[in-house]
Length: 435
Image (cartoon, rainbow, N blue to C red; front, side):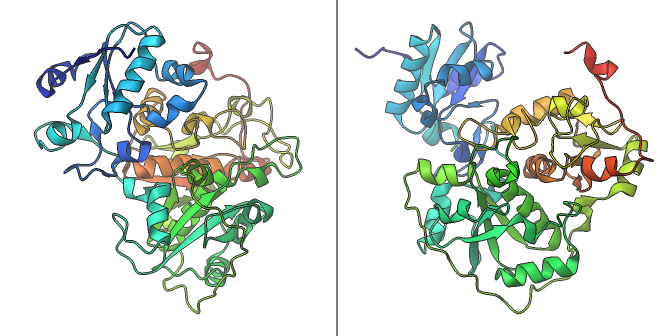
């Protein structure tokens, strides 16, 4: 027998909106939460302060762990809203069964809240650059999805020296791109403008092409010779970053990568799509040099009160227990860099991803950053070992609309290769009390 939940009105929800005890839960898909409207609502985004907990996640055995991870506690008053009243009811029942006693439901998001410009809403500033599998499906089916105004596009499956990641299943019509096309293996920095131009033209990409990047998470293992070959999901964002630096005007990333495509049950292709070269990329490279910081500028940033180097590595890497890579010997960190924990190791971004590989709720990322002293009023240069994780953290900040964000391309690999550069190991004093 289903539970009868208290249904609250827009007026009563408005009164609860500023309470610290009341937690408003948005159970719509993460992309809708970010800003994509799919029910003809007049405003995209979510109720200000709402927490993203998609209905899709109720299918996971560890759903309650996700709930607790989001700091939703039994003593909180829970208010659930979404598009579908049946889904709202099911999530509410799940909370009750998990020991939450104060649970109510709100059914008027579309017709009352989103339609009233006087009621506060939020969205990810550049949400249109983070697209859903449904958006990509519309695009490749010949439709015109929202916020797409171009006449030429390319879906690109990214991998690192492992075409089998592509050949074992990809989005129909997608071509593959090895990250080595855009990165030089000697340094793992972006390639020269001439090399990038050649790579884009060989892949059929011009500066005016809308490019949708995605990759495939294949459970990276540090014991493998090339762990990055299984981390195509991070490699895709690295490629997206280099494309934007070079001058591709419209770059999108499939939120959740190939996993999101699979989760929607869409058709998978095994065809080895042939690349169709173009004669001219169409703009001088780099069109956006400000997106990249190299070592001389990184040193200037460390000395300036108006900038920060942000270390997107794991804790063992940061304190010098491991280098993080089987081809980097030195261990340690750049003195003065702020720690922005990526997750478990060099090939995972758990602290920036949800369980389904979609990007983590941007409010959560921003809250952690700000607590560490990372704020949008400074010039921030994100870095890791070689650029992948730094590029993903940068992408999150860029999506949020933070005004001056870059990637320190050389990262720990380049910094540690010069014995003249200082380094530190161990737990920094300002963090020792927190650990």
